[in-house]
Length: 184
Image (tube, rainbow, N blue to C red):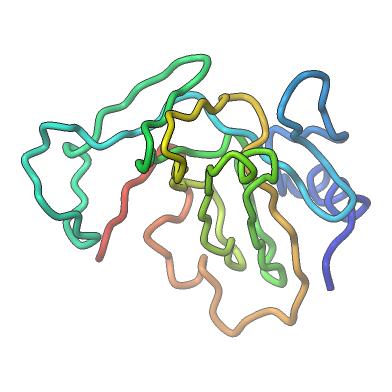
């Protein structure tokens, strides 16, 4: 079952499901963020990683994504070059209960401009800031805004798994900064 705003609000207050938590949908000249009827629109944190143009690589390999291939930048608005991406993170920190799976989808405001956000599921007992790519599929530079909505997470309830992400001590557990791909 998809969890509603009442459940999300209760879990945020009692169990730190989302921190910081915005209990209503904030719009007012911004790309919306906060609690919605059946989900939570989370915000883009300040700072992003972009691939260095002079990194000396001719192929990206997820098994060899070293942090020195990236440059960290921070500003009030970011411009993403055409057909390129940046790695970003959520402003919010998530703590997923053992019987919950979080599914994320990009916001329609950005999608209508050709910006795509791909976020893997938030597995049972995973916690941390989300790291995700923001891809500009448009033939023009695109601006995105830290502190404003970037994607929405929906919470689905199921039976608790035999082994959770926390049990297996997943490699992205408790991440607080933007974390490039890693293989262990």
